[in-house]
Length: 69
Length: 567
Image (cartoon, rainbow over all chains, first blue to last red; front, side):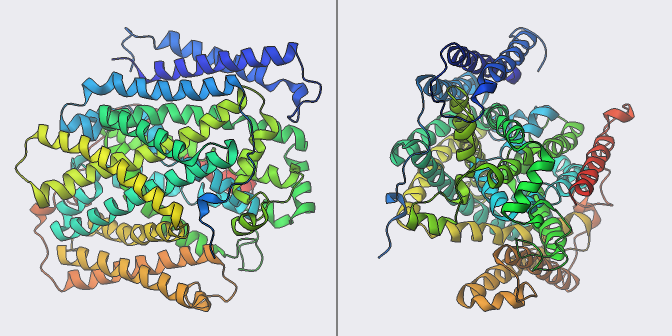
């Protein structure tokens, strides 16, 4: 049976990559008048990267076929 | 003339970009995929209703917490933090942690070794059929109504935040929940609740991080709140000496005895919506550890709920108003503070994740209600009262159909609420009527072997009737609050606390008196159900750091220190 933690890894990995991609795009193409406060911190970039790393670790560690639950 | 609630439509708060939409759609696809994947593992009653009783402590613990962490809870308490300040944290700390630890160490062994499917099921074993019938019918009725109310509230939030059509939100979310719970039963609900737990944290944690950065740290935040509101907005206990010294209009007696000792104990130890997750644990140690793990995380939920509300007080340029004023003026209400903070800090991608967190919160709450309703209906109403000779396969099919019917009744309730918004107030008040007396009945049943079946039944009934009576009294004559809450300065929240306290006491007194006047059960009949007559199973010969009592101690110490820090 596929571990619940693998599903969580998939969710974090896919969402992380999407947010990281959006963050990278905004970093390279900053809007003239950002709609959000603290735009300069590029939160999407590092939050997306963090989620991607955690998601990848979960996916690897709990990938189907392992005996962990 | 009253304008139907659903037709008051303020301008939307945020606009989603394509990447945000992809994140939301991916969430729906993933929860459905989990439901389809688990459909082959819900063929027996134990699988469908109890998730095979094979959940680890972590899965059961996170699911236990997630079932309570609905988006109404997130948005409502963030709004309360804006309105009342850090006092709202009491509902997460003293109003939760002691009760969760009590459940783990004292009550869980009895639930677990009795192998009951539900809390009404325990009442049947301990007090007999009448007590179970009162508890099961009231729980099933209120659960499905609450599910509908939550569904409407979610659709309303999506309309306000995103401009989504209210019918679209109701049907998409309810059908998704119906599909994955019908296919995979409790296991599917639990798996999705754990997923939703992660999404809620991932989507909401950025707000306090960026908010504290903008406010200049906790010390500066406190100064700004003191300037814009009051110094009492950042103190947990120092203003609770009297009803007039704090923004909530409550005193420490209401918090300690009403909230912590009765309402919180009642909710966390007898509300089957949350207890069902623990009953699915694979062994006694996991069943005890699960609420402790839940308590550990519960202590930090104020980071993503209370802190954004406090930050809103300090950094938002506009002043938020009560819901009733917002409906007339079009201004933002207290309950909008979390979406407003989300829109303030989150750009493309992060916004989609935040919205997904809100949707996940709503759906975990809805799935929790539906799966609990399904179990109580099938095992505590249908099987004992309608058809007691069905096969296991028959009851599983009944569970699947009940899931669908429960969702459809919830949808009907949502549309009913749409026409009569005031129902929301009544339903939420009604739900609280049953919690406090039920706790009195269950705790006496577990700890006092002299309690009898008639005692349990009449105590539960009289406690519930007294709670309804007090509520109706204050509804008819608002000045009666001074008698219920023992002070002319008491406000609405104080009423709930004192009402719970009195109804609990009525339940206990009636149970004791009737029990003393009726014939007790023999000790042999009570074995496995009552403290002192039951060999409590050991968690095994394991190192100290693996024992539930050790981790309960750790959580207790952190809880104590946090209360001192924010005194």
